Length: 135
Image 1 (cartoon, rainbow, N blue to C red):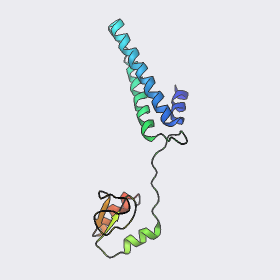
Image 2: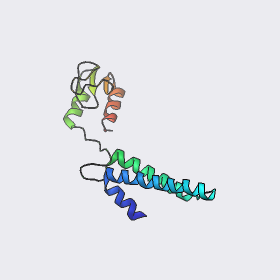
Image 3: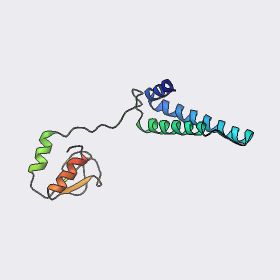
Image 4: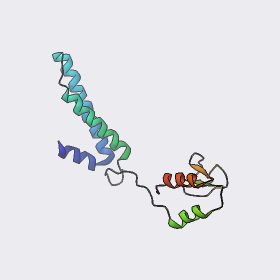
């Protein structure tokens, strides 16, 4: 079973689809067993649920280029940009998505406004740095 899970994890999104197909087969077997014998083994749907979770994770986090399981990695913040944020005259705005300094609550670089924070004090700066992956 471990070799099967390892093979699914190493095949990325394709492994996610295969995992969901395995889960559908297990749930189908459970339904057939319930109709035929008026009962079922709890282990089979539990294993099916495990394959649903693995398939869902692979569909979301599977890397289509290399076929591997990947997690989003935080891109380190440029030290010069971090020093600039600490030393700028406040208040100012910073976009935590594209790491730019817009003039208003709307970022012209990436077109977003949810990720634009107004920096008024040290607590706002700490929150902005934390949202960009810095401590």
